[in-house]
Amino acid sequence: MSLQAYKTAATRAESPREMEYRLFGQVTRALMHASTVPVEDIATRIDALDWNRRLWSTLATDCADPDNALSNPLRAQIISISLFVSRHSSAVMRGDEDFEALIDINKMIMQGLAPSPEAG
Image (cartoon, rainbow, N blue to C red; front, side):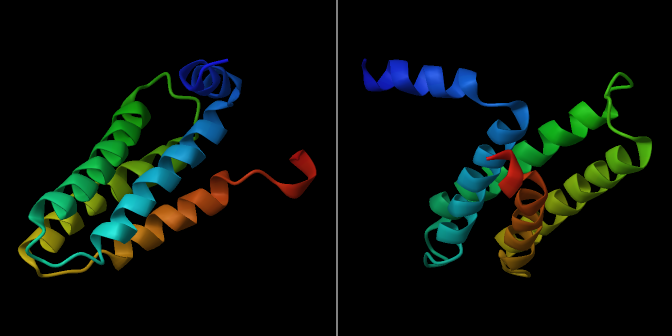
């Protein structure tokens, strides 16, 4: 089986929750890396911030859908976090803030998405 076929099969076998966990892990690793590069490495910093902002924007858009099955308070919280992420990302690019709040938020979300030990 080719590597691409394996990746496709693995993706199909993932639950939406597992896929979200994996995506948050990838984005968070990109943010962590970007936080360590020199300020002059604008491309790395922008790429990580943009990827994270697009992830949160997608979540907010999904939460704005009236057919979303999440509770209204949880949907509102996710939208609120998305707005914060957007504002904070701009502040990071201006040099007014650092990456830590964005990394911490993503790590907290990942803890909530992590498979429980009894599920394994």
